[in-house]
Length: 313
Image 1 (cartoon, rainbow, N blue to C red):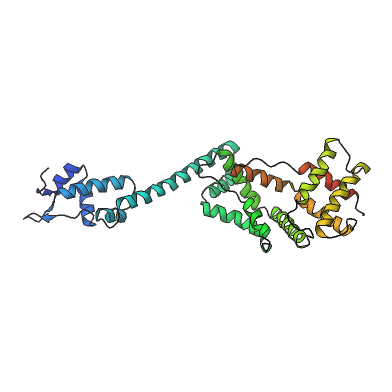
Image 2 (cartoon, rainbow, N blue to C red; image 1 turned 135 degrees about the horizontal axis):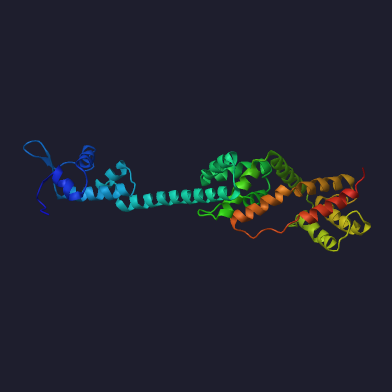
């Protein structure tokens, strides 16, 4: 190709494989301007125009917009910067497509009806920021106004699902169910009650340093009773109720035979025994790729019945 030669728009079309209409379009927008004019007034282009058009075609095939392309060919923006930005944009699109593909697989597996399909589609379209906002609203409802204690910040982090960029079908399914749970007003009320009770316990905590949550304490005491088939209403359960109640009283600086304290403990444990709480924690483990937590349901149920049997009225 002669570096000094000038080409008509038809010559340029034959050399680049682009149509005359496309070249004229790029010329009119200043992306590949004509080098000059023939005596008859027709546009003429030099060898650099061929190179610019080849670059323009490549960038268009990669999906870049005209303003960005013009910046590149005019060297107002470096090609590496554009490539990096476009690669990130494509990566985001790929993540979105993967998530939607997985969601469709979940819908097919669950045999969803129209209403659930609309909900699933809505949730699948949420960005990472919007997903965080959805769960953040739920956690704010549960812990809002109780965050004077640094422990609550850790609790909120530990209850936040982090859906990976390329999730497995079971992770998407778990996240969808978890999102539905977070919208349940009754479950929100239970979580708020639990958080408020925990906050109040910490305010009245008379024990210095770190101590175990009362649910963990009762599990240690109740599980051997369950394993041996002890009836929670029988006298054999008395020592367990006494030990757990005494530990709770010690933490709150109260008497362990205080009926009000025992009723408070019962209320705390009944909230903790809500099956939706344990379901949330199990779904959270699936989404975040954690080991599934041990179930406290049986021990809680046993101890709640044992404690209730020993309260008057």
